[in-house]
Amino acid sequence: MDKFQIQSMNLHYGKFHALKNINLNMQKNKITAFIGPSGCGKSTLLKSLNRMNDLVEGCKITGSLKLDGEDIYGNMDVNVLRKRVGMVFQKANPFPMSVYDNIAFGPRTHGVKNKKQLDEIVEQTLKDAAIWDELKDRLKKSALGLSGGQQQRLCIARALAVKPEVLLMDEATSALDPISTGKIEELCMKLKNEYTIIMVTHNMQQALRVSDYTAFFLLGEMIEYNDTDTIFSSPKEQKTEEYITGRFG
Amino acid sequence: MRLGKIRETAMQGVFFLTAITSIAAVVIICIFLFCNGIPAMAKIGFSEFLGGQKWSPTNVPPSFGIFDMIIGSIYVTAGALVIGVPVGILTAVFLARFCPASLYKVLKPATELLAGIPSIVYGFFGLMVIVPLIRQYFGGNGSSLLAASIVLGIMILPTIIGVSESAIRAVPESYYEGALALGATKERSVFKTILPASKSGVLAGVVLGIGRAIGETMAVVLIAGNQVQIPKSITDGVRTLTANIVLEMGYSTGLHREALIATGVVLFVFILLITLSMQAIKSRSENHG
Image 1 (cartoon, one colour):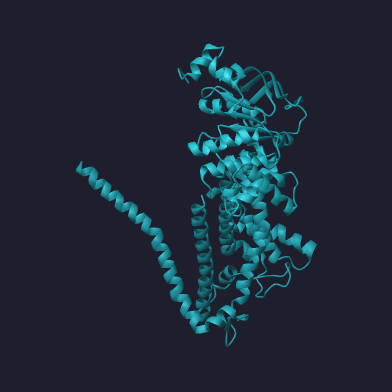
Image 2 (spheres, chains in turn cyan, green):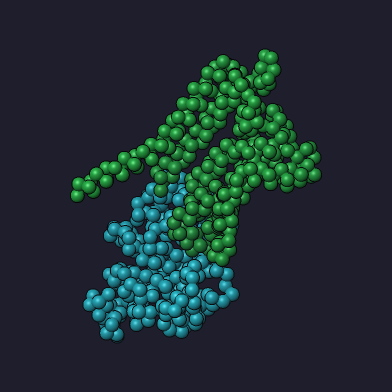
């Protein structure tokens, strides 16, 4: 089943045509990876899915983007959209507060006040994000004291705490060491049973290891989209093949 | 080559001299204050001077108790904070996060202009506008703790706004984006992530404001009433340490004059404490990024 349906979408930053006629459907409970060289528009497309692009001045989008058939840029409340479509950023950005308050921030935002209920959410979310054992004794400590990998997994947990349907990951492991990266990849595979995950990655091995579907972007165009095995074993487009074999990019 | 070297040495000397000037000024002021003030305090008696509630320097025998004025300065400063802190911080938040660029071009210089207005003009404004309003709506003669608090509250705004705004702007944008991405509204993202993250900078602005308020003289002396008493309500008159000095310095002699300088010492100690807490805040915020 399709979680996202994107039809003839174009995006301009001022005069710059950043995304050109994108048509793409992404499936529920799968991991979709966006790959391509820097500046190809993959992060831009990702940020269009939860309207974080609204923050960029002069960003204009035409065409249709739908979440479960509902127009993202239509009547949908942007805060509700962002609750449904969570995001993990390239650089871990825990708030300068305790681990507990980081996780509780989202639920509190959406009206959970009961202390016991919050305790349960924090524990359950940290368990879901496979970081409970590491953090259970440091819940009241500042999140800024955690290692980079822990911070990023905390951010994943924080995103999960509002019970989203989708998780967008914008090069979420690019600043991490291989062990932390491995843990997050493992986590993604576990999470896809309950969530739809869309990740932007520069690491082709990662796309191959983790994702079910892969879309290859180049200069604002989507060159090819298929299941990951096909893309990496027998790409239809020559440009895709050149990119994944490392001839450019 | 050698000429260049000589020039460099000479310039180093000039820089050293200019640097030493401000330090020398502080040292000389300290020496002056303490050499004149401490003996006077000793003569009057430290507890008599600081804790005494009777100030009648021209009586025979005279009494020099400045307790009411210490309390007066603290009340007036606290009153200024009650008005200046919320308005100042909210203005800073508005300027940094909500203000459209076109409005910012007007608002920002306006807040800076506020800092440039001479304090006597503030006092005049207070006397002609605030005092009559208070007389009309709250009773009393209008010159009061309330009047001084309002005017001082306005006077410390530019300090609080300026320092707080730069503190708010220094917060990484990633906190804001992180909160938005969780579905928080813009207001919640600003007030629950950005503002708490900037708290040490904002606090520094408030402390600077306290320094400004406690040291202010001309505006206060015109509108505070200047009665030596601990005010029982906000419409009562109040005399601050600074007002005490400026009111009586002109005609004082002997121990009276020394007692006024000793009042200056007390003021100086207040400012010293404020500066020290400022340093503490700064080093704390550096340690915590």
